[in-house]
Image 1 (cartoon, helix red, strand yellow):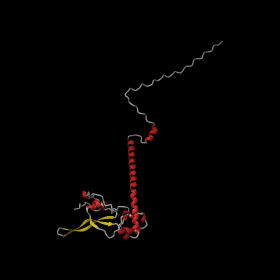
Image 2 (cartoon, helix red, strand yellow):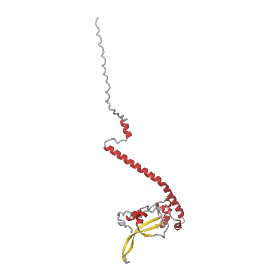
Image 3 (spheres, helix red, strand yellow):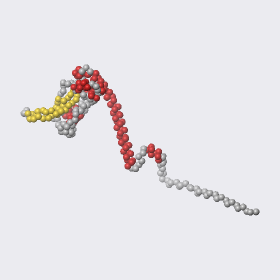
Image 4 (cartoon, one colour):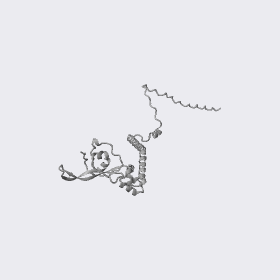
Length: 246
């Protein structure tokens, strides 16, 4: 039996933890777009007698490039916690259906081609990544430009894939600089609280001069102070001899 989550759509209540046998990597396909919703289904007793109508969670799977095949299935724990966990959590919080990938409405190739955008969305193509995964069998249903657009979408996805390591490294460097700035600010606050100078060390060194050399303690008594010579007394001038009268 499925483990029923508590809470109602839009209630904002937490979800139950996924069962151990349903943990794993989510579905990474951009060609599939799940749409969770509540559906009224009849409930029968053991004798087959109708009891009531009950709201049950269902998922509608939109397949990129396929307008006719839109399967609806009763939601299971496999859908909730393994295949589409992010989309299901958004549904439980009453949020709009999460779209993984880059929306085609943001693609410069289709910036001034709104009719083509609506045509792609009619065929359940909502992202550039989803367009890149459209199968060959669905291309004729989209139109004459479908194959060219899919090729451009694949080139876009490949370029993003090559840029991802560089972008990740730039983000890591940015985070590192931010952490270093926070550490320097914390050190300045500590020095200010202790009454220490808050100037950078090179400025403090230039204002206070070179630091004195450390004195090595050898255990011997300190040397006597140097002898101070007595100050020399200035010479007194000799008195002049008085002249005698002849």
